[in-house]
Amino acid sequence: MTQTAAVASERPSLETAGDTARAWLDANLPQGLREDILQEREPTFAELSEWESKLHKAGIIGATWPTQYGGGDLGLRAHLDISREIGRTPMPESVNSIGKELAGPIILAVGNERQKAEYLPAILEMRNIWCQGFSEPNAGSDLAGLRTKAEKTDDGWVINGQKIWTSGASKSSHCLLLARTGSVEDRHRGLVLFAVDTSLPGVDIREIKSIDGARHFCEVFFNDVVVPEADMLGSPDQGWAAATRVLSIERATNRMHRAWRFENQLQHLVSACAENPATRRLVEHDYARPLAEVAVNIELLKGHVETLVGSLIDGNEIGPRGSLPKMFWSEAHQDFSKLALDIVSRFPPDLSDPLRAVKRRMEDIYIKARAETIYAGTTEIQLGIIAKRILKLNWER
Ligand SMILES: Cc1cc2nc3c(=O)[nH]c(=O)nc-3n(C[C@H](O)[C@H](O)[C@H](O)COP(=O)(O)OP(=O)(O)OC[C@H]3O[C@@H](n4cnc5c(N)ncnc54)[C@H](O)[C@@H]3O)c2cc1C
Image (tube, protein in one colour):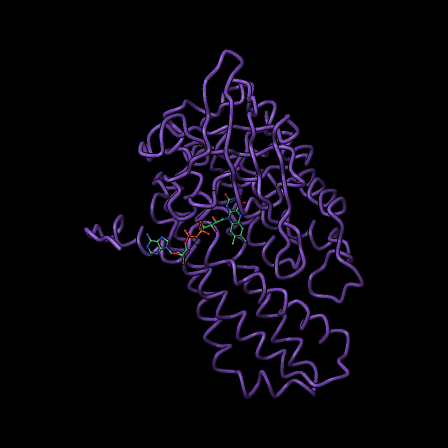
């Protein structure tokens, strides 16, 4: 939802949104999806999708979107309350986060009525899964250097180019594509956003195997793909403004549950170790101080997210301040992941199920945390944004 709409729809009865979400999550999270118990197998995409569609029916997902598009029409405070409960619950991350956290908000901001009516309910109901086609082989941090070309024709737009690191593309029905109408020298000008149906002729999606064996990342090639004019989001000259807005949303209000998920992970590690005499000494003696430092970081992060939400409710834009929590969370969480790996590496053999569960979870967190300081803009890029746009320094690398 737009920030203005979020403010306008702010309501007084906000305490209940979090309470209701917590009660529902406690009663309904399937054992097979819990991240804090030992699982025999990974949940399938279909199971995760079904879970998310139930979350929507329960009013937990899409709470801030307007009711005519399937949302709950609640304000940002309610979103924060619900996000806290999502974070405190050891459940899987969304398999449609691009749809819910990027494509949806941007369609709400710049889409026309037909696009909103068609795409938004389909995202919440998990009928449409979205991916984000921004990065290219030579345009990651330097997004304004992207080369994928959109040429206007009588049928609409013809797209040619290549995207990379497109998370979840092979399971997506739609791609939020950023392309350019002019030449690369135009940089920020002439960039345009599209909602591309990934089943269109000429869209070639190839999976990339990553270090954990997953095939989540993809390369996406566009070979003379004809995209109807009706699937352009906003106007051709709005692309850069829309893209940077997407990124500031991605860095700030999205995934605000992460602060509370981080806390849940720390608590899981500490309690699982403390409950077992074979590992108690690790947390109560060897690693007590660094664990306490993690707890401080989590409190700072939670406080920062709450302050940011308060500021948005007061009617302020996120702008470059989206870089602050993104950078702080990714660096602090990555540090925690190293510490957690250190601790579980010192577990004795013949582990009990609760210790095997926490070991597996911490190893998984460690592998995933490698990427946290890269996606949605690297730490160096966040520092550059903070230096230039918050400190107003005339600074170049
Ligand atoms: C898990 C994961 C999921 C992703 N999912 C998606 C997705 O779904 N869709 C999508 O479009 N992209 C996605 N990405 C890509 C991501 O946005 C890029 O990897 C990121 O923007 C960095 O770009 P790059 O990889 O090209 O690295 P580069 O931009 O080449 O950077 C390489 C190094 O140089 C540094 N650097 C670059 N420019 C500067 C500068 N000006 N000042 C200081 N240092 C600099 C960087 O910090 C980095 O350390 C994903 C990445 C990851 C890791």
